Amino acid sequence: MANETLRLALQPREITGKKVQSLRDQGILPIGICGRGIEPYSAQVDEREFNKVINQAGYSGLIELSIPGQKRQVAFLLEVQRNSVTNRIIHADLRVVDANAPVELDIHVALQGENDMVSRGNAVLNLVQSVIRVRALPGDVPHQIDIDASSLTEIGQQILVKDLSLPATVEILDDVETLILTLGYPQAEEAPAAETAAE
Image (cartoon, rainbow, N blue to C red; front, side, top):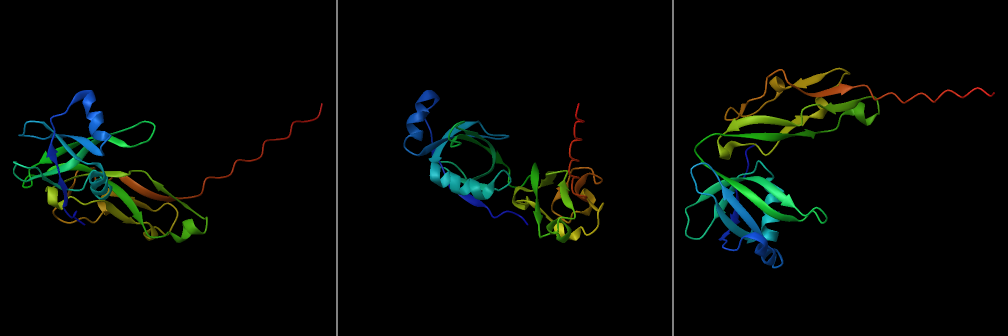
C-alpha cells in the first residue's frame, strides 16, 4: 500500500555550528535539506512535530515540505543523528525528490498474522532478508512490505522475492530468487555436559 503524504512545516535556519544547541534548548530541531538539482540549505522545525511525522513516515514515507518563500517540495528522511545517552534526535537530513521521477529505496519487511506451528513451539520463522530494494514514483513507494507468516505450514517452506505481490507501479530490484523467510525446526537444546568422572 502506498504512503499517505505527510506534511512538515519548516523555517529557514541561519544559526549554524555550536550555536544550534540554543535551538535545541527551545525544542527546535536543526534540519539539513539536500537533493538532486537543488542547493543544500539549512532549516529548522518544531521538534515534537518532527518526531510525530517521522514516527509515521520512517525512511520510506513521503513528506511534503512547507517552507516560507519556497515552492512545494517533497522529501524522504535521509538520516538522523541522536544523542548517544538520551537517544533524542539532535539533527536530521531530508532528501528532496522529484515527485514525477522514480526513486530507489530499501523497504522493510513486516510479518503479519500468526503461524500455528510457531505458536505451538514446533517451528521457528527465520527472516533472512529484512529489507527489499524497490523503484517507484515517490507517491507509490510502499511504507512496508507485508508477508503473511501464517502462509507457511510445513517445515522447509520458503518465501522468495518472486513470491511477493506488489502493485504494478512498484518494481522490485532484488534478485527474484532471493530468500526472504523460511519455516524451520526450533533450535535443538544443548545436551547437558557430560559429568566428569570421579578420580
